[in-house]
Image (tube, rainbow, N blue to C red; front, side):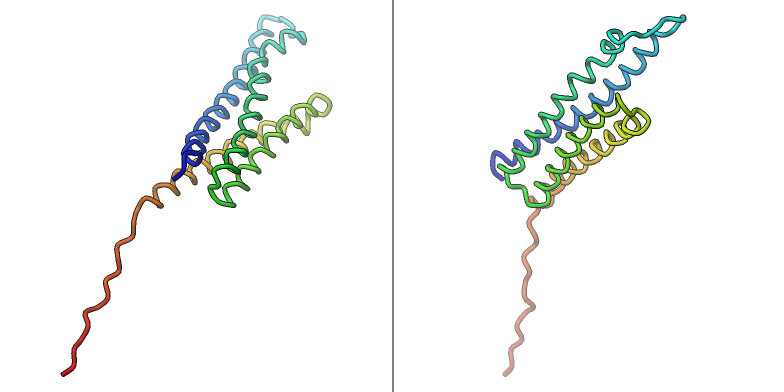
Length: 155
């Protein structure tokens, strides 16, 4: 296995961790914003942005990590299906950003699709990570040599 393939394999764990952290930041933002409205307080735009600042900023880093994943897949050549899988992940990440942008105008549709797409991203990244690591374990095993049956002699 080449060095780029090894980097690709470990990078997938980094991307998976980033997606999990991004989902956690969304939860933090939601509950932080809700806690600011306790005791009759109101939530202005600045306070809302403060609550979701980590989620917003880190989200763009996750998209960049998705692009790096696609580039690594192209360079490492792990196989056509894995490159397509990395492309699908990157497209889902772009869709995620677009859903967030459009959710401010139509929250009932795009706002509802944003977290659902996040779980599609999580599943796609986890599946590719598992597939890449499982494939490595399979390729390390060498099959037993096949021994031909004993030859029979006729006299």
